[in-house]
Image: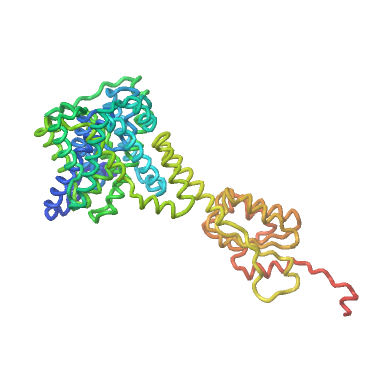
Length: 553
């Protein structure tokens, strides 16, 4: 038992295999890490500000969580830190409970993630349908964009926890002069971020935009809000004070944070594994690593962390092969904190708003939206419903409702695949064959189709023998099996002999337990071959004798 426990524990710990091939890929990993660090800087600052925790918290999260998740996570390419989806969840929590609860939320959510990973249920994310993922992503992008509206117009955010309502409420406090400056900065950032990649694909448009626009704002003396003073070093770790009242009030928010962190991190890791041949990912270890990252981030004053899809994609495209790239990205940010915190402090908040607005518009390629709508009507409905619920209600509810809607359409499609077909008897026709009904049950016979199938077969009243051909049934549940048993009983009660042909081996135990075989008039009425079943059926047919006048004719 002890060796098994040790083996399970080792599966979640770093190993030498995590850095296989590092000698060949070291240079590429360092370059990729530096590139991602430059890309992550404005995003870390912006997400920290947008969440209400502050730019410092966003930087700390990118540094601490980036290193911890890079070492303990289940993906070689995953880059972790603050993300837009997490900001969407944290905003209402901070507004309701204050920024002081953030370390407790990090600790609780991190422990939940570790528990989920250790119990090895991380693979559940593979059950999330594609339209749900894309609708969820679109909803997050819309929320991130709307959250930047107050900073973009230089007005305080509205009181509502809903991003759309808060954006509208902020319009009532617009100052024309301030709005002109902030909107100008946002427009300048957007133009630079759109133009830079066209000049060269590897130009970090976001950092170039922040540097140029900030320089212009400082030289022109723009009257706009700025990030403000940042620490020149990481704060010392501090364990948060816990009391039963705080824990009980934060249990639901922490569970929501953990659920979002798990979903987003596993989706990001899955995307990374499809973009590179640097190895697959371990979903359970990834959850454990993200949980430890959130705990560490909270101890240093940061936010809950998740795998960042955009930064992970940049990491993969920049040539990363091992975890050294993700760790390097965090070390680059740490160097900036120690060497350039005074420079970062003068960045206008409107500049960061511009970065996030452009980032939000890039989160979901419009070609993907077109593909979803062209795939099927059901996928389009799932996509739209998930996106609307994400924006108007809640992210976790959106995923749950999206899965339920997708499940409904899948069940409906599966139900339509099931049916009953009357087939002609094989071989030359014989007298009395019109009294034998050969019925083939196709597709799926389960709770959603059982009543319809029962009604279709129950209408048969012009036969003496019914042969139920079950070999074409692909899916049979207990409701379906019970329906077959009920059907056999009903037909036998009406004087119709029922023969069953071709029960699949995987369905035989269920049909036996539910009583299908017991409902047959005789054990010999179960057949493996159709010819034998037809031959036996003909022995049960009573052909009426012809009238004497007709027989003389």
